[in-house]
Image (tube, rainbow, N blue to C red; front, side, top):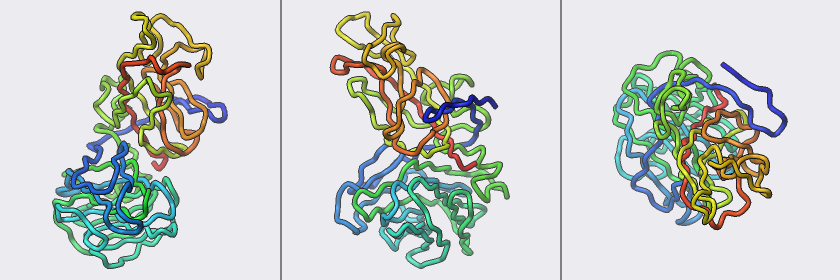
Length: 339
C-alpha cells in the first residue's frame, strides 16, 4: 500500500484494495423520483406522501446485500428488500429501514416495528444483507438488528421517499449467490474490506484502474463529462475519508482551432489557459471538486482520499467553455471510509 502526505484541503493520493460482484442498482417502476448518478431524489408528488417510488431490476436470489448512503438528515422515507416485484408503499416492504424525519432510523418488516433504533446523519452508510436466509440490518458497520424469520428470494430493493427533496445516494447491490461467513457481520471486517461498493471486481484490482489492466467502464460509475460546462455534477455524494478512484478517457476540442484538442491528461500541445483554475497546468486537464472545496487535478488516472464530505463535481482546466466540445468518460469508484 502506498500513501502520500497531503496538505490541508487537498485530496490525499494513495492506493486501495478491493474485490466482489457489487454493481449499481438499475431502477425500474419509478414514479416522482429523479435518478441522479447512483441514487434517487424525490422530485414530485406531495410532501410526506408515499408516492415517490422505485424498484431495482436486480434481485437477491440467496446471499447478497444492498448498501446505500443517506442523502440528508431530517427526511422521512423507507428503503428495503421485498419479495413482490411491484412498486412498494410504506407498509408493503418486507424488510426495511425507516428514516423517521427526526435523525433516527429503525427497522420495519411489512409495516411492523422490529427495533434497530439508531441515530444517523447525512452520509451515513446502511446495509441490508441476506445471510444464510436471515436478513441482517447494519448501520456504519454495526449490526443493529437481525430478523428472526427465514426469508426466501428473490428479493428486490425498493425505495419510497416521503419528504420532498429527500435522496438516497451511492446505492449498490450484491445480487449474491455465494455463502457468507462470520466476516460479513459488519463493514469493518475482512469481507467489507473487499466489498468496495461501486465495483464489479474486488481483490487488489483498484476498482478497475488501468494499473491493473481493467479499462474504463469495467467498474464504478461512468460519468460522461460535458466540457462546455465549468462543473459537471456527478450525482455522487462522498464522505470525508472515502477513497476515490478516477479513470478517464476521451477527447475534447477546446476552440475552433482543429489542433486544439485535449485528453484527460491535458492539451495535446501542452498549451495552458491563463485564467484557468491551474494556469500552469495543461488546458483541458481533468479536475475534480467536492462541494465548495478547492478543485484538484485528476488527469487520466488517480486514486485520492476525500478531505471533506459533499457532492462530487468534475470539470476541465480551462478559462472559456462556450467553444468546447467532445467529452470525457470518467469511471469513478468510491471506497467507503468504513472498512
